[in-house]
Image (cartoon, rainbow over all chains, first blue to last red; front, side):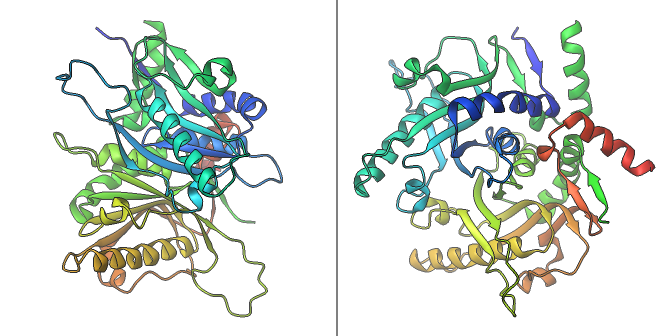
Length: 204
Length: 204
């Protein structure tokens, strides 16, 4: 049976808080992209901790991705092809141009198979490059980094671009866990019971 | 001095939970639009409670609006002009067409001056009508409703379209409060202290 862990809101809050200093020092983000729905809550919390006194908030752009459950009929699985977009950035507008030359932090709740994260990074990189060409701003360097609350330590189907391997600070997980089932608080039907389970799970 | 209230994550969670039945019965939403950053957390929580067994999740689209602080030099304040868009739906794509004929629930954390909500409703209604014309789907009725965690009972600068007055179920606030300062948990620099203040505030 897969082990289940329960994470409270305050734990999520503290995971963001604890990671903020590293993010500010190593990623220096100008912009966050929240992968919805799971990235909404951590991105909003993180924004509070990334704000420097006297500076404006770091803007958040949201995209919507969901992992399409393959029926398993394909003999060879195509990486990154099972993701469907429910929301994307407007390529023609300022939304995409806003990314050019920036340090962009992609935020999601969990890195499970890495499929969604691979899709997000590769597609965003591609679209920004196109926007840079179109606007003749190819000299500017756009850097994508990743923040997740939890990384599951398991073989990954998705593979991040190679420059992630050489710049380990571009991938940041607040916590690394085993291949467990993570219950996030925003999915709890009984939040008091959820919190109780979170408290007792370590002591059993 | 303005009274300050402290709201915990679990209270936010329960406000969404308590409102879900009314939303399902009266709004019957097909889609949510989260106004970022404040609407991200309630929209994500609400999605869990709006899910019916066997049905897919209600999709969330995010928009980004921030209230531009007027310098107060204009003799007459223009309603809805102080809002800036940091993200919007892609008019040319499916994102906007997806709204046509739907019950759309706009989600934000607080209704303070109502300026942002007025802007969101009016601009979305306008853009959907344009999309309906362009796609020759004018026969379909798109209905916008609003959910906020807190409505501040005070004179409002923003005014919702008239049909909101005749359909009171289209405006839903989980809680109505006075003109107080609301501290949401995602803004707390010390979440334990925040929770303590939330516990003691009623007893002082």
